[in-house]
Length: 496
Image (cartoon, rainbow, N blue to C red; front, top):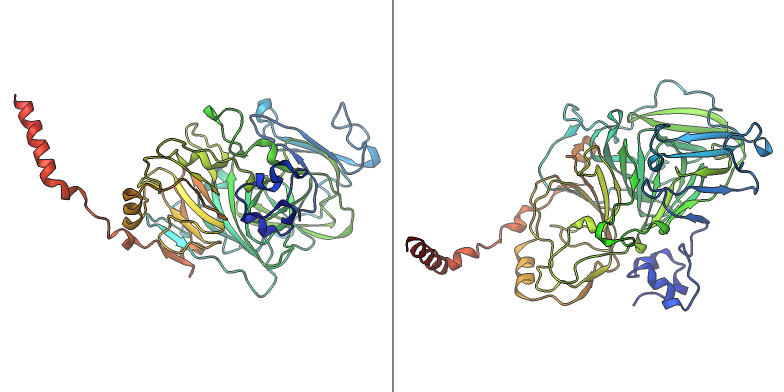
């Protein structure tokens, strides 16, 4: 039985609900926007390129200048700084920028220390086959959950591990898939990804993410997107933490088109939440780590990078609760393509295929009549990297636990074992709820993935067991006599 809304202080209770709508108790209590244990306030909406929202927030009222962006004197002696993410002349619907009003501009630092930090041997950015540290394989691979270190201080940045990807960030098109494992919070240390956008999917433990725009509290069952060039810091309030990351280069995440669905459905724009201004004025040593071209660099400064008192614009980090996703599907026969599960998409230069899609498989009704309900046997062009946030997920050839990773490259056959095929073919399944208390996701791309050294050599790697298909029966041959009779009749009719 699903928990009552008044019992939802425990974040794990949200894993048991069928949909966020259950928290409203059929309108008998005041509705609420965020989970009960979320400590922050947010602004609603999505700064999508198709429906460009512009947000604004002031920690001190009356700070933002109106009628202009860069006055001769900003109130309280603040500095105006523009963060521009697209070409200045980009079309209005695609133009991404924000104005920040801060105690010190980002340029106030002590320079970069040395040339670059030592490589994190577990990360990768160049996925071209010429790179000796990557591997090409058609094998259906999987990884058991990666262990979180139990000794030493490993924070979000030092705990990054790259699994697979395509392209190179210096080419401004491509993507990388990572996991993170962390046992400590970032202390007086911020991170800047100068290569691309991070879509962060916590699996174990919440993330308290401090950004220049304010804070985001992101729990398993929620996601966050931190755009290119933004400074952020990650605390882990629940202790050891693990999750997944989809990084895209040369593009940005946006809401997919709804087509014949109309104006509503899937991830609705108003359910995305952006932070409110929350400044920090402290005089103390800070380290800023930059990722550029897959390399890590470090600069230092003597003040907090989170000293933004007010801001406005449409280039803003955000989060989304996956339990608010509005599933759609067939209510008559057959399956709809898995694009109906798309939460966010990132365009490629090919107008007919996205660079990346983020899809989820969450609780929903399964109702199609006269239809083979399990995933049908198929081959498709997409590279698919799956993960499980919580619960259980069928369709894998082995135990697929939360924190696991599953990978299938384009055109590799998919499908279930014969036992499941036969059961689904012999008996019409009931109308039922599926994926209860579970959310699985897929990072899908039109690009072929290559596998990193870290993932290839990991003791967590294993192959999907191909023996699961050994029992597939040739049912066609059982009808040989009937088929021969029909062919003979057809031949006689053709001669006549």
